[in-house]
Length: 192
Image 1 (cartoon, rainbow, N blue to C red):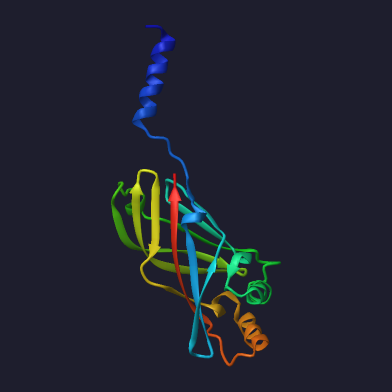
Image 2: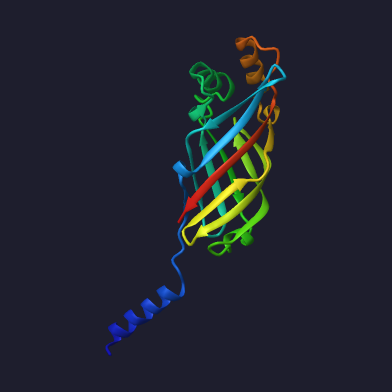
């Protein structure tokens, strides 16, 4: 056996002994992000963001990015008002959540799941706020992770400097009130 053949065999042996590490990517069509608003103290509505992207590295570095212009309230004028008056998408086009996931998540085998809290930084409207989500993480197969909130996370508009935007929306819509704290839920799927 030549030196070249021996080297090739060693390279193949190493490649199979250590699996290739690659980033996981969020699957937009299998992911959703919803939030609730309550107006006039009694009318609660479900809204969504329709454009999400994200990556998860094998070392546990997570980033999920939300296109704020993709807000969908099922009313076009309200979508536009939220984009312009609340989120100010001209200056703050996206929100992001970054975190380092624990080894207990990354080390899941296919068919296993875990309930845990994931703490990271939510960046929105120029503010960075430490935020925690309670989730169920399932490794569906060797190439797919699914992450679903098991309870809503409450986000306060004032924490992100959005209080004036909420007041502006309330005034232009002629409402008595809009709650400034909103429950947020999501389901995201990553493939690698």
